[in-house]
Amino acid sequence: MYFTLQPSIIQMDVTRIANLQYFEFTDTIHTIQDRHNFCELLFVGKGSLSIYSENYSGLLAENQMIIHRPNEMHSLATSDTVAPNVIIIGFECDCERLVPFSKQPISLSGEQIRALSRIMQEGMSIYEPPYDVPNTRYMPKRREYPFGADQLIKIGLEAFLISLVRSLQAGGDKSAAPSALGSIQSVHFYITENFRTKITLTNLCFLFGMNKTTLCRAFKETYGTTVLDYINALRIREAKACLRQRKHSVTEISDMLGFSSVHYFSRLFKQHTGHTPTAYMKQTAAEKINE
Image 1 (cartoon, rainbow, N blue to C red):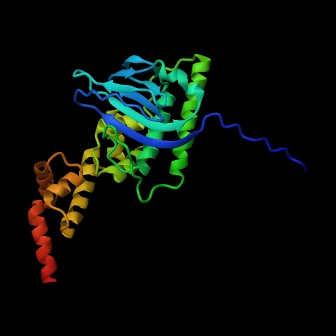
Image 2: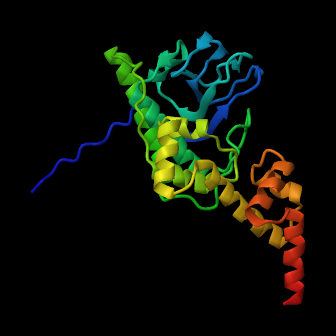
Image 3: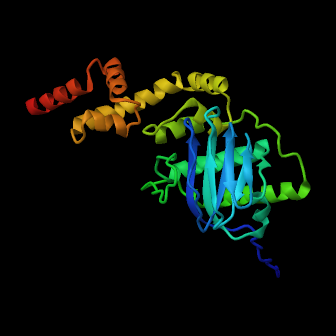
C-alpha cells in the first residue's frame, strides 16, 4: 500500500537559548541600555516593571509579557514601592510573527503562564544556578540532566510562542488568572535539585502555580515536614559532608549552600547536630585520626 508522507512546515523555530533567568527584585534597579543578536522575553509574574526600548517604553504590569527583538536597544527599571518577580528568557528565533509582541505588552492567560513556568522548571534542571544575576553572558549546564530536557525547552518555547500568535490572531481573552495547579512531587524534586541556591515560598508558588497555603499544606501532608525544614535538612546534610572533607572553611560552606549569613548557618547547624560547624569539623577529624 502506498502512503504519501507530507513534510512538516516549521513556522516557529527556536534554534538556540541564551539564558533562562528568574528574578525576585527587592531593590530599586535600573539596568544599562543593552542590545544583543537574539530575542529577549520578559514576563512579570508579580508587581510591575518600567520598560525602555526602541519599540515600546512604558509599564509592564503583572502577568504581562513583552519580547525585545534582536539588536533592539532596551533596559528596565524597578521602583522602590514594587518588588516584582520577573522571568527573562533569551532565545534565537527568526520569525516575523513575533514583531507585534515587541511593540506593546500582552497579558498572558492562565495556561500560558503555566506553560512559561514549565519551561523555567525544565531550564533549571539543565542550567546551573544562580538564575538571578543580571546581564549573565553564559549559563553553564549541569554535568547530568534529564533525558530530552534541551528538546523539551525548545518544543515548549515554540508551543508557547505559537499560542501567543494564535491568541493575537483570535483576539481572545488573554487575561484570565492562573488557577492553583501544580504537582507537589515536582516541588519536592525542584527543592532536592536546587537546595544549594536561594529558594523562597514566593519563588515556588510562582514556578508551580500554587498559593502559599496550598503549597505548605500539601507539602506537609505528603512529606511530613515543612518546606523550610526540608530545605534546611538538605543543607545541613550537605554541610556535614563538606565539613568532613575539610576542603572549605565554615564561611565558604555557608555561602556554597545559600545561607543568608554564617551566623545563621552556625546557629541552625547546632540546632540540628548539637555542635557548631567548627566543633563538628574538629570532632570528625579527631575520630579519623583515632581509627
